[in-house]
Length: 324
Image (cartoon, rainbow, N blue to C red; front, side):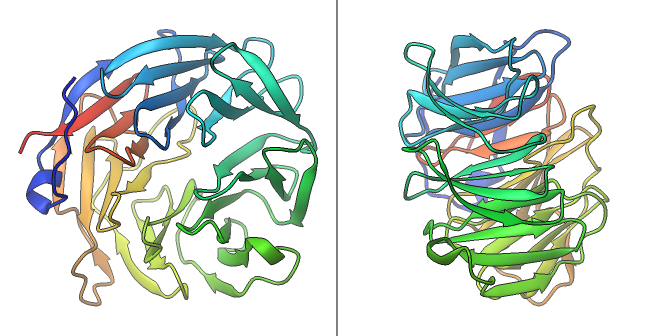
């Protein structure tokens, strides 16, 4: 598989095509999470078959299976080491497990949640981790310690995200239809920004762009809301896609390009939608600048932080590369 490093122009982005389809979870399973490590070399997935799969992005091949039949596996995320990951248990208890992929040994356990963990996020600049669960809590952790560093009581379900600096995190409450920005250094204080987000239906993802200019709240009723990443003002709604249909709701139906200009999203056609946020002129809503046919619905999306590669998944993992 050829590694591609190109200027991120609209022509390049609109030329994305499926380059490799990798089916390593069981035939009846669906992929529930996708993540790519800081180096851009490795990709990890979790699935309903209670397994974690590891892939080489550069070679475009599967390299390892880690079974987690006893505990289940969901929300697998790399730490800042490509040989370590964290993931949420789906049965027996609600522990978050810190796993060495090198020798399949657990490094640490993060205990405290009393119901299903629904979100895990690693700070882009430190060893701070956020978790949210159906026990009406957001917990703040340091990967170097098993002890919870902080706790917020929030209506559930909610979504969490770090901004590009790692100093700010967002908590998006579906029940209240609000998003709050917290300073990670003083998370016990009131949020410094709080705003209402008029996004209908269930919320499945909140994400800052890599330049923190925008924040997206992904819904499931035909549009996602885009907001100012600093003050929360509504920027636009992105429309023109068919809502995803799958037994397990997507935890990442959209993702930003690395420069923050483009937003990628999945459609049930099946298709990959691309919206250009680079030259907005007070439009209340925008349709895709490009719709690209996909081999399966791109239900979960992750962008490579180092190379021109996009990963999407549903029942299998697809790597996309530009053809321009």
